[in-house]
Length: 282
Image 1: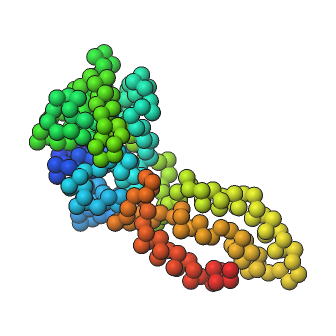
Image 2: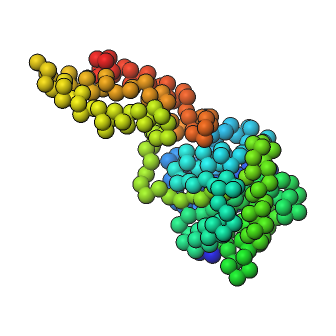
Image 3: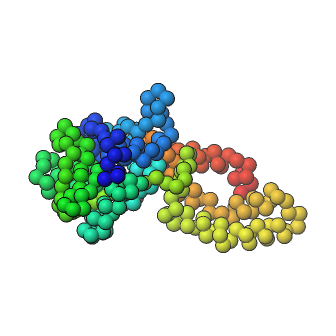
């Protein structure tokens, strides 16, 4: 239960009935000492539920809550390292090993998305961090963020695993869990690159396989200049891919394929990029 002592310092009650996912995320982000890179109140930089609005509008969250994929998007957008495990991606034994490892190390934490119906509790879908594990009794401690309904409570690990198997009506699929930790280095404050996109892979291949040849040919041309060589290298790149793989971290974005995309900020960035002399030379 090494993770318990860090989590309990940040234990909170959700502000809205449907904010269990946001409360679990805020609690875990603060536990991991991740900098929100913006102030909360006055000079203090601290995660609060109302700050987690970059993947799903808060008015909709108040009405509908969030799905596991949206929770993972929020965690990534706010600087956490996230591993997402929909139900069925790992078996019971592997889930038990992950829980035991996280509770022992306290370097990462697990948030589960499950159905309360499995525990004969009122309500259905819910998010909570796991606050501890008893190997002797095979029990996990649920740090329930809806403390107006239930205090922290122990449940059999196998029962929790079954609770994740119940279908989420919002997605038509089972639920699951995610492991959250800190990145070994800071993310960009302004934007991140979605390296899963095919457009990014095209840009990567150009950089690794073709750009050296383009630069060499431009340098060998009569009257070659540094500006000309740089222009040739830039013009040879698949610059149109920028629209696809750049995601800027600001408020008010939407989720597309699990990726936080800031449409207005992307267009602003591209407009400024097109205004540079180098781009004009292409």
